[in-house]
Length: 303
Image (cartoon, rainbow, N blue to C red; front, top):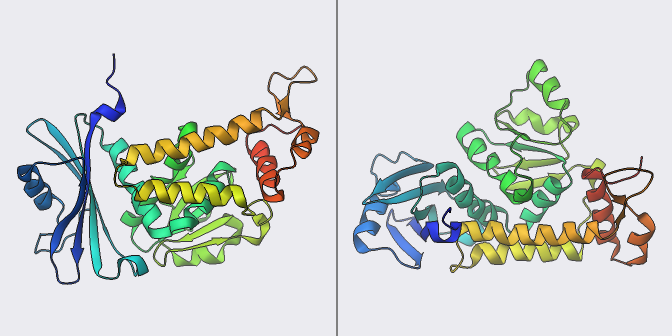
């Protein structure tokens, strides 16, 4: 029998490098030995005088696996004196992809705060997300994590993490209904035909296309989701995997609500949304609007 994920993850910690060049452990939960702390401080590259930034490293020490994600702080008002930080995980199992995704969730939330809910909403509604940054490494680290916000789907086929504004590549991308696409060419911002949501990762800005603003209207439900994401990510007692689980539980709650408003008719095996039942619930307009468009994304509307 497989060991539960919560028991595989041993500890989570945060190392920061300040404007003076000092790298220090800021917090750790539940605990890491002094010996392992010293080793992880070496591995995170923040004490390396060569100043080479290793965005993600992993290794093993005395049968404990460690995973370290390091990022440079880009003009963050909340982290004025911090130039870099590393999120450190220690675990019993070897799974770099899983733990890389977990650590990047914290980075996304630290960079976009409540606006993370825009990315969540776009992913739930299967919209087209374009991410720009001049460094391909930054794009790939960011985009590979976004599918984790809709963990219930387990769908990484929507990920196109490195695309050029090349005719063949663009046409292939357009053939996809919903996607996450990464570009290093700033000219992509002038291609509204390619995106519903545009993320300028270099400037920490998110723009919603006018064409989808109605579907992406934010309301009370979105505020609740945004607060859940931020509060969960900021809770030092929660691991990164638990942050994803919190978001997944909220997602399941939303999907359960949607499922309760469906019916099976006309010999269709798949339930479809009962629009009258949705209206009778008298949800706030933005919530009703979101559930309707979510039903469309899940192919639960009658055609």
